[in-house]
Length: 128
Image 1: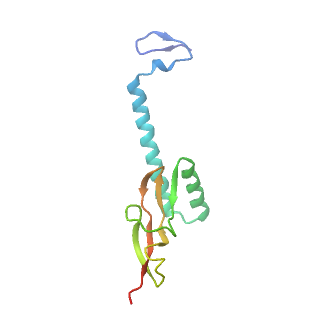
Image 2: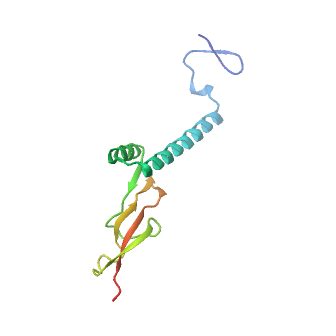
Image 3: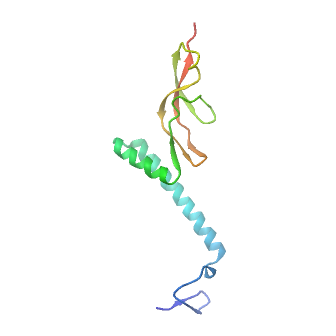
């Protein structure tokens, strides 16, 4: 089967990359990146609704394989730039004040870019 360029001239079966217009390559890359983001968002939507621990685990493994990590910051110091406070747990231990006690809603990061902050419960020093 013969292949033809846009100008009507025949080209060989093994087309070189020089036959692809640079703007088409950019458009293809933009489309692939947009498709990736849409798939990630669909996976996060499915994770929020999954009732099976096995399904959640498999979706998180698949996302991790492409660089999207689940964020469960239990034991970390609360950081309002990376965490969303959902509640507080009183504590008498001053060392726990401001530490994440529980992750209410798992957060996600795509490499270094935060996609969704985890919603957390934070230890707060009990008032006397």
